[in-house]
Image (cartoon, rainbow, N blue to C red; front, side):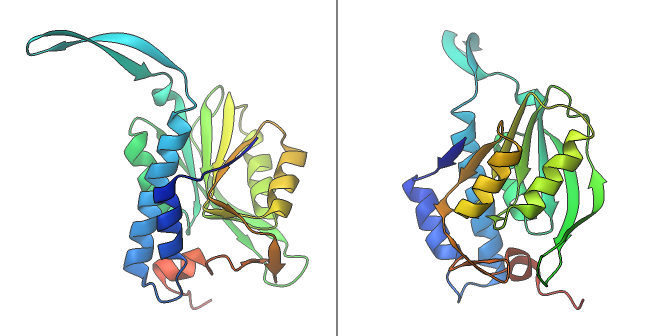
Length: 210
C-alpha cells in the first residue's frame, strides 16, 4: 500500500527543508516536525476503542488508540534520527531499534548492513523510518534482515520523498508493506533522487570525513 500524504502542513515543511539554503539546525527541526505529522497520519489508520475517563467534574466518553505499546520504531542511521524523534512524540510507548546501512557510491550501488539492534518484533507494528526511498535497494535489504528476526503484525515505512521505482521494488518484494511518503519523484542520478533534497544525513549532521 502506498499513501502519498497531501497534508498542507507537511507539504509546507517539505518545501522548507529541501531549500538549498537551509542550515542543519532548521533542517533537523523540520524533519522532527515531519516525523510527528506522519505519525499522526499513521495513527489515524490504527484501531481505537471507546473508553470512559474520570474528569474533576464527572465521567466523559473518550477513545484510546489500540496497540500503541506494541509499536517498534526502527531508525535507519544516521539520516532518520531527527524524523524518529518526531515519530516518538506521537508513539511515546513504542520500543526503539536501529539499523546501520549504507550504499556504495558506484553502480550497482551495493547495500551493506553493518549494525542491527532490534527489540522483539513478533506480532508487533514495525515502523521503519528513513527520509528518502530512492532505488529501494537499501530498504529491501533492511526489511529482509528484519524478517529474519521475527514476523511483524504490521510493517510500515515512513519517508519524506520516494521514487516510483523504489516504491515498486519494495512492494514487489514485500507486498504487505505500507509506505507513507510526502512526494513521489521519478528521476534518479547516481542513486540520488532529483530534485529530492540532497543527502539528508550530511545536511543534518555534517559531511563525514570518510
